[in-house]
Length: 233
Image 1: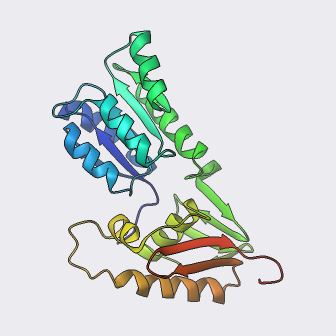
Image 2: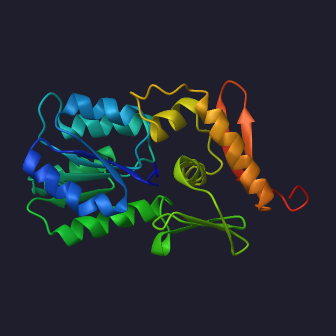
């Protein structure tokens, strides 16, 4: 299985429109669709998503409430409000609560895709032409290719997804549970220890390729990736 580098949550109660949004943005990454506010908040609180496309008028809990609570836990999570409301007051309320973008229905598919892609770029989750650079490592998230000092390195499947996730959260702590939920999913029957196996393999492959990246284990906390100092490389 090839793990996609970006995870997008689509929160829209109109199923037909949700499918349209999915078809518009699925080239950017893996999409998950939910149709009510409570389920949306539950998914967001998992901490595994890179971008949320959030409707305002939802059953169970409205989008503004979700936005406010999401911002309290994930201040840097890109959130684009997708709504039929076009009054200036509603837009300003959304921005005051922390929305990064606001697009009004009906919308042009090209505009939605462009704004979603821009938010991912601003967050450092995708680079120009789908490239990510960290240290002497270059990752093509669209072609699933890795190079160290310009030389290709064979890192595939979930190991590739693991590398991308760590790079996207460079110098941040990510927990074993976050990695597991991100790459295997909540309902996977696989043991949590599989994360340690993939982490070990990734370290070996990066070391073998002379990548100047360090993946540090923080006992009982998680992992963090950073670029090694020259004297440590």
